[in-house]
Figure 1: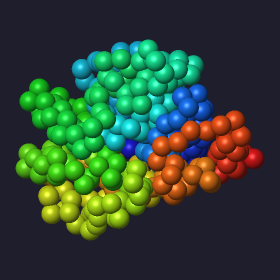
Figure 2 (figure 1 turned 180 degrees about the vertical axis):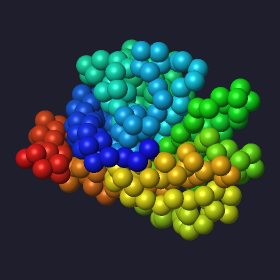
Figure 3 (figure 1 turned 120 degrees about the horizontal axis):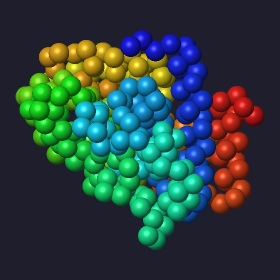
Figure 4 (figure 1 turned 45 degrees about the vertical axis):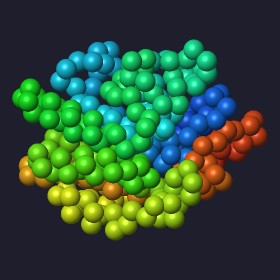
Length: 280
């Protein structure tokens, strides 16, 4: 499934729109995990608009691919992608994280169409993905389970228990991706709880590792294609990203792990995204 230049052009257009959506929703909500929402835009965009076998009109059809956002605090990014994919009206996100809204900071699969698992407590998404992958095997189904982890949550022991089991059971229908933006709420991942040598750790647990630029659609596509064709070991894609990508005053700034925008910053953020895409 080699990605074409035309597909990349279309995905970039989507990513531009979704970045501006994330900024709008953060403004409406008064605050959100905007830094980590922006860092994973290319990953979510290519999954939802190229790879995932899903149907927004029938969000629970059994043979669909599954997606788990293990870094559940990035819900603002996933919500925007689901809206643009057609699961619900984007205008509903004006109530994001407000009283009685179905859209909390961490998305609830019982309230939001298109969400396969409720996540929030970090370090649990990969375990759920292992369970779904084993379930597909037992049911003799061909769907894939994709799991996006944050790098900060990989200091949780449960991640490595899941990694060990995925390797033990040779779950090649599971594709894990790490949003390696190198920052978490309290600072740099390497200062809070060092995870390097990250790639070697996954290899030691029996995974094949692909390290890529997480903002490069061609690189992401090549890695996913490789993972889908691997028949022996699970594949982890370590995607090197920039927290706050696209907004110059947020990029690589830990204070934008979570933050709000006033009217002036809203304008500046959108202008920055437009500039990043050559639309200024």
